[in-house]
Image (cartoon, rainbow, N blue to C red; front, side, top):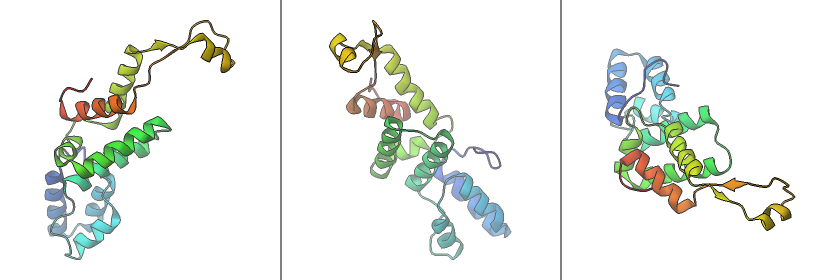
Length: 164
């Protein structure tokens, strides 16, 4: 995922490297670094033309990281909702966006927190529901967090605040 340039821990690291690569005239590496970090081609083009003072801001860097991680993870259904929630929050909350970009924080780690909560909070499914669903197993449990709980777990994972 971050194979060539490594995981960058902040938008400042991305911008410093972009500036150095630009000053060295290594535009191919600058484009590769931006691609590896999920920075959109339009931003790269504007930066190279001098229309942007820096390649990315904190929110662009966070969204880029999430998109790169999601492309590898390929989330489906409820996980897609969690990813979209996180991206939306990064656009509204600069502190969260900054924390998303930190080294060691990842979409996989965040979803693992949600899965951990789910496994610890399973509840039995009512036998009438099982019957209506055509399920003949004698015991079925379910532990998917509601969206409010999931939002708190996601925020807690990235910011370290209480949320579970």
